[in-house]
Length: 123
Image (tube, rainbow, N blue to C red; front, side, top):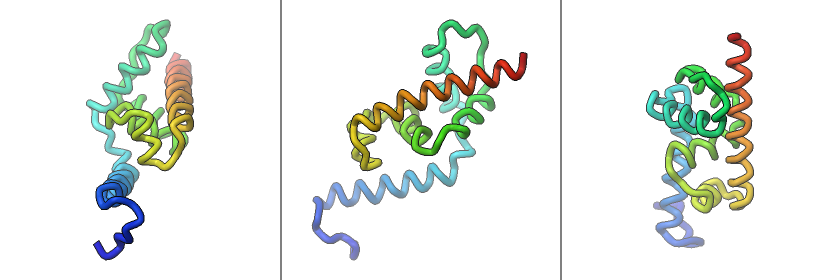
């Protein structure tokens, strides 16, 4: 409480602290992506790549997510796994709404490319 300077509302200040703590936690624990979360990513990847006839394992999806640039990975996680919308993500990360949308779409595209590349390596 000593660091509250009154520049923003108390609620906004508290929310920023909670978000920063949550992001720190996610960074520390990102290796422990749950199978449920990986399942959600798998469903998204399958929807985006309907022409692909193979399924991805949770481990393959986790590796592909970890291969994403950090900005893409965070935006993708906040939207798909945490359920935030682009406006909320832009506030959380202090980026524009357009940047959130762009990073999300690029993250999905890159994730699908990584998954396809992984599958090609196994053929």
